[in-house]
Length: 389
Ligand SMILES: NC(=O)c1ccc[n+]([C@@H]2O[C@H](COP(=O)([O-])OP(=O)(O)OC[C@H]3O[C@@H](n4cnc5c(N)ncnc54)[C@H](O)[C@@H]3O)[C@@H](O)[C@H]2O)c1
Ligand SMILES: [Zn+2]
Ligand SMILES: [Zn+2]
Image 1 (spheres, rainbow, N blue to C red):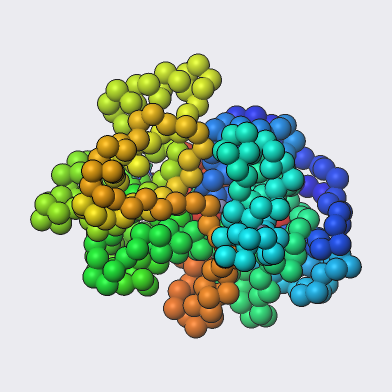
Image 2: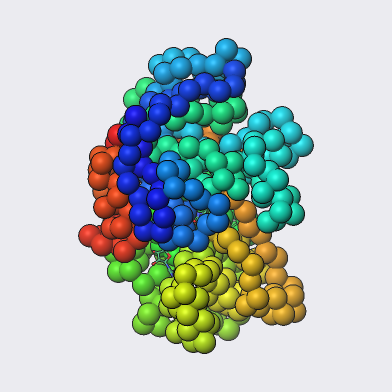
């Protein structure tokens, strides 16, 4: 089959690779109909994530048709249309039973590597390094789906791919990002990043009762989309974020601050920015904590900082003193996607939201290498790419 493979920093190619096979009786194989490029893929593309190997198949936001079914699978049949969560979860361990699917204790076959890096291993993820399982991803013609009775959500006929494919990741991620922000009715919520995740976070903040949403970015078309989602906006290249947020909240600070940017934040012109550039120049790309820093500093005393943005490494520049002394709550994590797929599918079916609004580019799998570059560099108004293999 054809699949988008990682070959190193900034080097992804469409290669011919072996077709996936059923490896466990609980697996299914799906034929991919739609699959997306995510901000999380950029961390792989930009060489930030350790334990990638040349030839790894990328992609973790797929949907498609079931074409092969393992003999122990109960819920799915050949021909079913499914969206597949990026998180792989067994559905039975202590964490899965608590609904904390991205912490599944059984789905990462390389748990030992993750344990060395993190103390304990989170769940396996599709197309996201060997440390997180070495699972082939979904930017491909076919994909093997382990624990097929737990993750995939069946899609009723009549709902087009564009409306439901984001149940695989970014809609649940925006929703959990807003839920983790502990929004009380009428609260002011500040959201850094108006990429696909940020935009779903804005809409979710409204669903959860925000009174005011302020969105921060510097890309004009993304700020415009945030305004269409009824957020007020701050351009971090033209305005001082801290000062503006303090003015907007009469000196109190936002009740909740959400970092929907993560490790590849731009715009730190200070000493930290110089250190980051120097590290990158000698081939040591590192997470940049600019946004996390701003979110902690701006958040009102006693407020909550939610971090859906992905970080990878260890940091010595996180303002723990301010966070501690202002009594902030910090909540974060890879999304427990399986917890949200059905309730959010219902919202789509009821017409409360049409997630397709973020799509700016629909391309073929062969165009994926150029699409990665366009998405990373925010060329051609690119906000979200959907590939149709
Ligand atoms: N927690 C999860 O399970 C999960 C799932 C999916 C994505 N993510 C993460 O969410 C983040 C966003 O994903 P995305 O697909 O929207 O990515 P994206 O790269 O399209 O969007 C990031 C946005 O942040 C903006 N930005 C950069 N620096 C900024 C700054 N200093 N202040 C404000 N905005 C700034 C960029 O201009 C861009 O619009 C990524 O880190 C991604 O890895 C997490
Ligand atoms: Zn994603
Ligand atoms: Zn589990």
